[in-house]
Every structure is written in structure tokens, then in C-alpha cells.
Length: 256
Image (cartoon, rainbow, N blue to C red; front, side):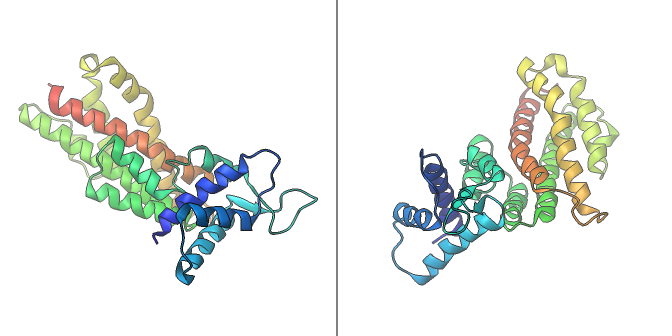
């Protein structure tokens, strides 16, 4: 059975059980309910996969042992603050890779290069390798930026107009400046909602993800990024992707 499916159902079970009033979570209860939802037949490999996924929820800080001071040891457990953040977006949180990818593909098509980096970002995130995850989601973001740059360059070339020299540079920061320059002069021609999203969110999205990526990619400290900052980058990425997709659609059809 696919590990991502097991992890998804396990998270859903934890979310459901943790919301029931006047109940104390227990690891055995979580496992029993997950087995029921998965209709898991007795098989040592499937059982060990489920146990590994439950262990990962503890290892990654979503769950912790003990329910209260009267029940401080296993099998009692509780959802941590980090776990509550994960469960609040369970359908598309990076802790649920399949849900995250489904959310992306439902809202905007992913090109193969971007998708490959997103998949690896999710894999490293769920392995607790947060520096690696930050670099991977940063690369996915750069792929998205380059796709937008290519669309903008092709449109400007097709119109026979000069384009900002920054668009042909190899440095992503310079390319971002070129995109902003080429689009900013056309903001009065853009739909108001798209202009407001671009003006407000584009610099913030790209800066946050690139900063986290750069901090992880340059070994200046043992822990250059935290779980929280990488989690934020992964949650921001879909919004960057959707905005870039809408910009590409506008560029291909209306940029003049």
C-alpha cells in the first residue's frame, strides 16, 4: 500500500479523534481506527508501514507522548501545536503530499520540472530534512518564475518590441526585476484583481521562498531554517503558482 495514502488516512484519523470531546488520544486507538478506514488486511509489510507513519508523526513533532500529567506516558498522546497547524489545512498541508499535489494540479497545471522539485520538497519535508526541502521548494519556485519569464519574452518578441535586458539574464533575482519592470508598465491594462494580487503578493511570495532557499543553500549555521519557515514556504508556493498561472494567461492573451 502507498505510504502517502497511509499517511493521509492516519492524519485524518488523528484529526477526527482529537476533536472528540472528553477523550484522550491513545496510539492503539489511532492505529485501530486507521486500519478500519484503510480496510487494511493482515500483512506484516502493511502493518509496519502504518507503524512507521505513526512513528513519523511523533518524530516530526505532530504528536507527542502523554495526554496530561495524570496520563503522561504511552499509549496516551496528544496533538502538538505544530500538529494542530498541520491538521488545520489537512487537505493540502505538505504533511499530506497527495492532498498537496492534488490541490496544486486542481488549481493550476504543473510543468514536469516544477512538479519534480515539488515532489522532492514534500519527500524531504516529511523525512525531517528541512534544509533540503527549502532548497527544493525554492527550485520549484524558480522554475515557475522561469516559465513566466519565457511566456513574457515570447509575447514581447512576437509583438516585435524591445524587452528588458534583465529577462535574458541567468540570475533569478535579475530576472524577477525584469518581469516586474515589463509587467508594471502594463498595470493599467490588467484586470484590477490581477494587478492588485501582483502588486501586493508577487514580491512577498518570491522574496520569502528565495530567502529561505538561500539561507539553506549557504552553510553559515547548523540550523539556518526552522520547520516553521519551511512549512510557510510550502504553504505559500501554491499561491505563487496560481498567481504566475494567471499572469501567463493574461500575458498570452492580452499583453500588448
